[in-house]
Image: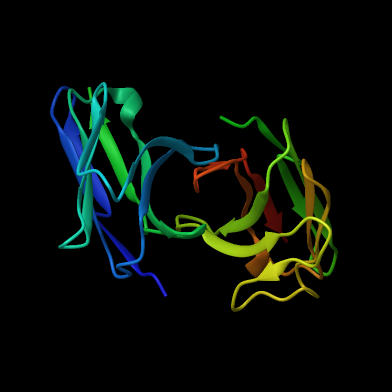
Length: 110
Length: 113
């Protein structure tokens, strides 16, 4: 089955700096890669996703890149703000069989 | 995106008792899932809730412990049976509308004493 590894487990950045979270997956059949943000006391919220037919996708301050050959994908957050502080999860999916990374706790210091 | 609600939002229960968690979606969805998130951990899929048939459970989860109902395309329940402190977790339902995009409910925070 699919195995998703996520790094780092914790990340602390200064407000305004960029943050990068990386994930690798094992199943070459995976073709959908979402990212979720989970704030304290809330459920995971989908923030961006990418499918295997594209290499990069942007939405304002966040972007995701995918390297299918190397089986890794990354989340990039630019101009970080304190409200970006949360736990971020990557996932890889093949036909609704979705597996999650262990999560990254991002802290943005004002 | 979907509007998903869960009841209760949190509960404190005694060991040996059972709790039923409800998940309501604002529109019909094909697929609904139940996840467990233990403190500080990632999301683990418990089962796929199938409308009109028995749920499909992941390895390590059984129907006797986590019975699931899905009477229609907008509603599902998960029961945590004969609870022990190890069942203390966040329980999340999620739905898929189309093309594998999955949305999560707010979660039910369960503490078993």
